[in-house]
Length: 509
Image 1: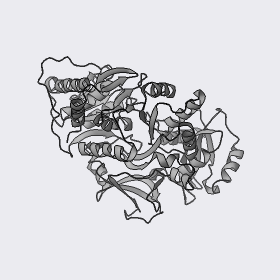
Image 2: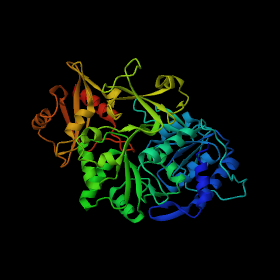
Image 3: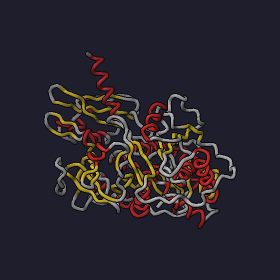
Image 4: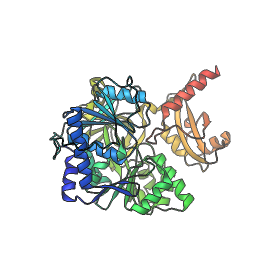
């Protein structure tokens, strides 16, 4: 089934229901939304000769036009490649070339020079609605099969060139139904607010909201601003949004400054990085029972596990700390296993690589059969994440396999160290990485942002740490920072921190 059928069905059932908002301004009801999509789809076919299966890229900030373009691409049977709008044009051009994109839509249509893009790819302004010149109208979405490609998601490329994750129409349908079943029930009165990039997880949550005839709201800033978001929530009401843990942390800080307690917000779905217990307590205290955690990857988008709001908010439970430190239980359409290095299942409670199987798992990596074979093994997606399952089926992540620090022959899981340091009242943000060490193999380094911007006494901080965790896990070095590098998704870039350490080591020679 073509995922665009959901828009077609909704506009037939509820044509006058409000659909697209720029801030608080109504841009389109569902009839107009679908009409613009048909108009854009006809333009792709008639003026650019696109056929089903062709690839179209988008390098744009969040906007209502973004959603119209996505659906126009699917409506005429093509494949969408949403690209992180913060990438350098050279990086975006590489993705367009690798994806064999015929067109790339940008903000303004003048991001690339003629020599930047591959010869077969043309740049267009995504904000220009083509005039209706009597082209043959595509009244219905082009038929697609469940296994047909719909979305090419390019990973962040922290270990080299990014890979194109192939997500089919069937993958997107399964992911969307999991949201309504496991994460949050959706009604036509809801409003999905796109404060995080639509090229990533926030954009993936559009489908179920389209299916249910809900509202789609792009903040006037077209990005994330906590104060703006709170004002928007109070005016729009019943707001749901996806946010990285770093975004939630900033929301808490702003809410406390303005004495805001979540009015207008229905649900905050968080994921994409670790949410430390200290930060989660602050968020629950500030916003109440509005938070839901999900764990997923681009290869199984947004749909590996879920920690429901009731469990997050139930602070009086004796096992709350262990549950809140987990990423919840498997979502409805997937199975989870923990595997050893030989890909054999491990018993309950033992750490190993997290593997996933189900209807949301990608079709493979675009033009990369070797990486596909290494990642999809016997029908299971090998996530590269390390964790364990408890007796009740709750999954706890300890780290990415590549992030584990081996110091003196012992494994140190950075998240454990970060969890402890994040509890210190003067620590605002922290990230732990390993640094090559001639004596120990690797040593633990903590990058720390303090609340007042001033370094702490390292001896006192270490002494405080040692009252809570084993000595071999303590940081050997603290690096005090005013902020930590993050991608547009809000995820801390550990690769950048490792590169900084390497450059600092070379400079010290």
